[in-house]
Image 1: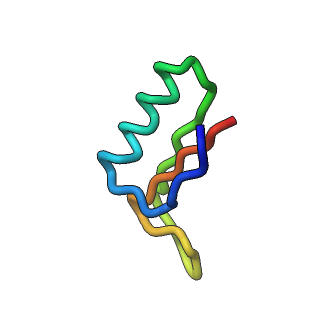
Image 2: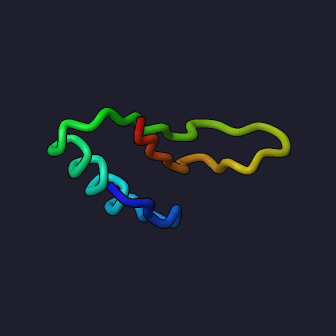
Length: 51
């Protein structure tokens, strides 16, 4: 799987997760639940890690 842009919408990241799953590729989905203080992450932000 090639490198993709990091500006996924919620639906796009789930579609990519489905593609990885269908290809039997290991991945992890991370979601920011809460952020305190100075942080680059916002609540609800998602990340997909292709391992």
